[in-house]
Length: 260
Ligand SMILES: Nc1nc2c(ncn2[C@@H]2O[C@H](COP(=O)(O)OP(=O)(O)OP(=O)(O)O)[C@@H](O)[C@H]2O)c(=O)[nH]1
Ligand SMILES: [Mg+2]
Image 1 (cartoon, rainbow, N blue to C red):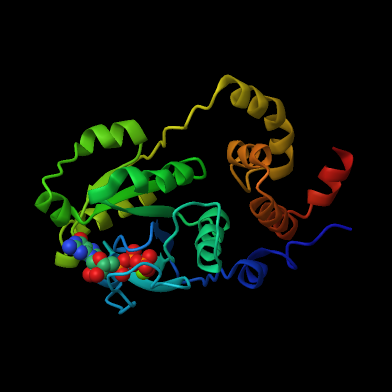
Image 2: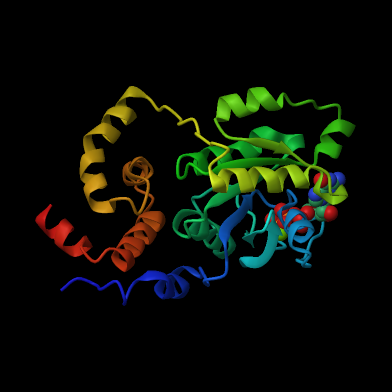
C-alpha cells in the first residue's frame, strides 16, 4: 500500500527537511547565496527582524523566517545559511540545499556579492537548473563601485534569463526594487526564464535517454531535467534526499517504480 496524502505532505517536510509552513505565510521567498554576501542584512531590512550579521562567513546556521508586506500582500522570507553549491558539504549547507530543492519556495532570491560575481554565479547557475522563479540580488554594489567594478545589469539579465536587482543592503539601497521584483514575479507581471546550461553532447544525449523515465517518477514534484542531471552525477547524498522527498510526497511512487 502506498503512502497516503495525510501521512505525507507538509508535516513530514518539517520532520525530514526542517521546512515549516503555516496558512498565513503568503508567498514563500528563499534568500540563498554564498556565505557573507549580505543575505541576513537583506532579511533584516525587509522584515525588521534582527538576524545575526557580521563580517565573517557561516553566521546563519539555520533557516530563520520573517514576514513582510508589500502592496497588501504577505511574504515569508526565509534566511538560509550560506552555501557555495547545492552539493552540500556541511549541515548548514544541507539545510540551505534542502530548502531550495524541496521547500518549493515561490521565489528564490540569490544574493550575490557584486565584487566577486564569477564565484557567486556557480550557485546561481545551479539554482537556475532547479527552478524557474529566480531573482539575482546583486548586493554590495557600494563595494563594487569603490573597487571600480561596473556591471552591465541588462547584459547579465539577458545571459542568465532572470531579473537582476542591484542593491546595497547595508544602506537600504535597492530594496524597494527588490520587493517590487519579488511581488511582480509572484503575481506573474514579471517573468523569469533561467537560461539552461548546455552540456557536452554526451551529457545531453544521456539526459535525453533517461528523461522520460525520470519524468514518470518525479511527475511535477521536481524538475525532471535537474533530477536527471543528479542521477548522471551520481551524488549519493542528493540522490538519497530526492528519494526521501519523493517517498514522502508521492503516494503512487512505489507503484510507479515497481511497474517501471
Ligand atoms: N559594504 C556593504 N556591506 C554589506 C552590505 N550588505 C551586507 N554587508 C555587510 O556584509 C557582512 C555580511 O553580511 P550578512 O548579512 O551577515 O551576510 P550573510 O550572507 O547573511 O552571511 P552568512 O549568514 O554567514 O552566510 C556584514 O558585515 C554586513 O554588514 C552592502 O550592501 N554593502
Ligand atoms: Mg546570514
